[in-house]
Amino acid sequence: MKVLYPYILPRPFNGYNIPGAIQSNYLKNYSASKNFEFHLPIVEITTSESFYLLKGFFNKNKTSNIEISVVSLFVFPIYDRNLLLELFSEYTEFKILIHGVLEGKIFSIIELLDWAENIRSINNHTYTYNDEYLKIIKSKL
Image 1 (tube, rainbow, N blue to C red):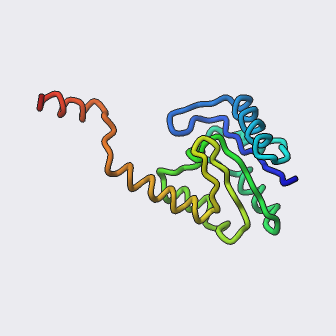
Image 2: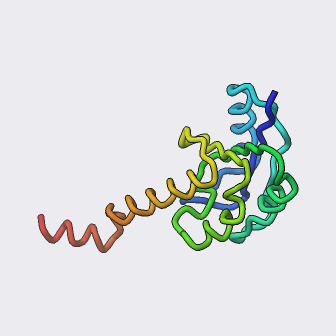
Image 3: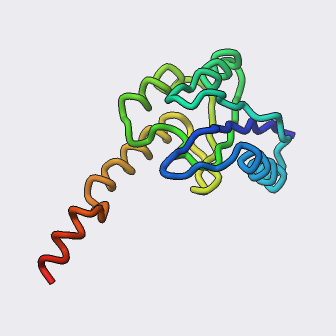
């Protein structure tokens, strides 16, 4: 049975703040439904933009096939290209698969970087419907 390592963040991501215990339980259920062996989670213990433990895990397992799961791919800095590249660029040749459970996606590092680029591109073409934009819409009614 293959092992799936859950990765959990105790900080908000993409406007959500899901408690670690709920993330862990959700990822445990996902592991069971996909016939993976559940492993204790990798938990970033900082509330900053640090991914220290994730990078350490990758570095310790650089010769292995690694599969990690996250509640959402948005736990990573998808909207910050430079930070995302800083996080993942040295691992593009590693055999890593990342399961984004809410998105229903499984990506290699390269695929994740491409997907994030597409998300940023789409985001640049959509409105946020913030107060300023709503004022413009109301003024045209």
